[in-house]
Amino acid sequence: MVIHLLGEYNQDEFVVCPLAPITVAELRERMLQRAKVTVGSYAYRLINDLHSAIFVQSLDLKADYEAYFVREYASFGEYLRRRARFPSAVVATLSKAIDMSSGMYHLRSWYAFLTDTYGLEFLTRLLEDPPAR
Image (tube, rainbow, N blue to C red; front, side, top):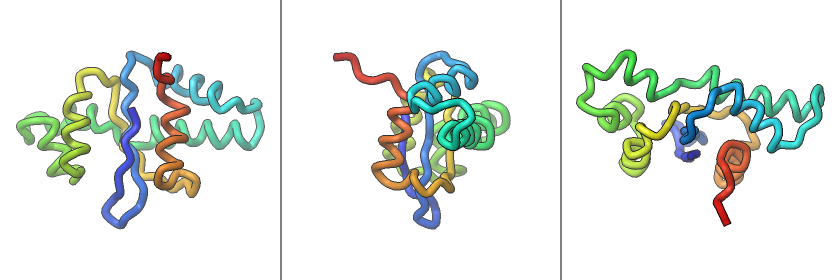
């Protein structure tokens, strides 16, 4: 699941929640395969760096809450509302998905191509399984 939201200064942000039990290394391979990039190419480095930005450099909200804030906030939803200052709709969606997700990565994007609807669609195509037909 990928959720788009606007940050404090109206910049695009995303929360990426892998719903299946999958490792970060498996997600990297999935992203590279779905992008159909050639090893060593500029596109390969771009997707590899995007993976790193999401799953290595971004804050895992679920792990952060469980490690440091579980005693401070009554629920994960309260943590998201008060600490991360997410809108109510995002809080409700993430609160429902917490038990199914292996992590919830908050990406404050600095990639110019990850804006608005295109950024959401691009990340969704790279990370999520297509709907069953």
